[in-house]
Image 1 (tube, rainbow, N blue to C red):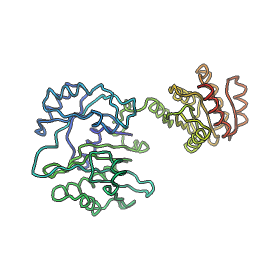
Image 2 (cartoon, rainbow, N blue to C red; image 1 turned 90 degrees about the horizontal axis):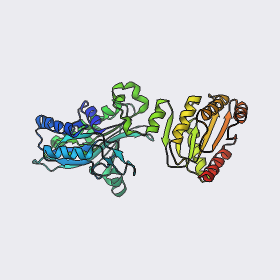
Image 3 (cartoon, rainbow, N blue to C red; image 1 turned 45 degrees about the horizontal axis):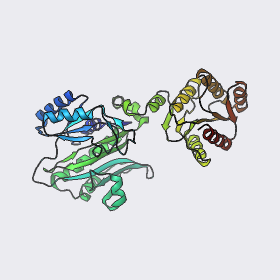
Length: 399
């Protein structure tokens, strides 16, 4: 689950991470009130207005602007709220801005030179532990730095059982060339970030930029956080932070019914039980010259209701030209799935695209009989390769 910047910052503050203070607003009037409150709390005379969407690259897309008066706060908030922001991470369709973060100015003058750093933590699945990735180059696309200047990116791995040790936090600060207040702050931030990562069951925490301000203080200017969906039952307070308006509507519906759905860019819709079989199905579709339109794993929940929901999710995509249902009956019985398919198609009044069904495993013969006797226009097969090839051919014919 992705969190907004303002939500991530509120969580990080609880773990001793100094952040750029801000107040979220959903209207221009709220933005002005937030700016006044920030002025009282921090003394700031300049405000940064940030669009709150689940995507990076906001600054380059015009989603981060500076206001030097309350009038400008109002005008910028008015401009951003309701705007569709297109960034490299949103795709051409963009994301609608529904709220903004009014933040204090942290680029104030002082005796020291300011500098932006990059700091993140994620799960290194190869090493089976948490990796701390950091760089002298902050405030820019870290992918670009990794490609052009890989020597500027450092990695520190936490011990799988002991965790991230104090000397490792100090080494990170040392590698970044920090001294004095900045060095102490960095050590504290790294330790706080690791505690937040493990305590909150995060899969990613990214601070970019992490600013060394002109007074030597280290400040998280931006924050991105992802929480492991499988651990949300342990964090009901974080689960309540979910912003479904930022998610794909189809994926929201799928999660409600316990289905795993991811929209793709192809034209063959897929409904499969089991993630491994789903991946193999998509591979075989591509092998035969097609492109999968989605990943949909119904698991052991192939009931009439979930099958119908699955069809509806797939058909939300106008690019779908055929649907392939590929079920291997192990825990789930093939005849039960077949009844679910027949009932779902009948309730929907038929499907607008060709349907290929491949059912193997438990009660496969009975499943075939149910499909064939239904009178529905369904292309039934027991061969995996044959089913994928047929789905692609039918899609190209109907397209």
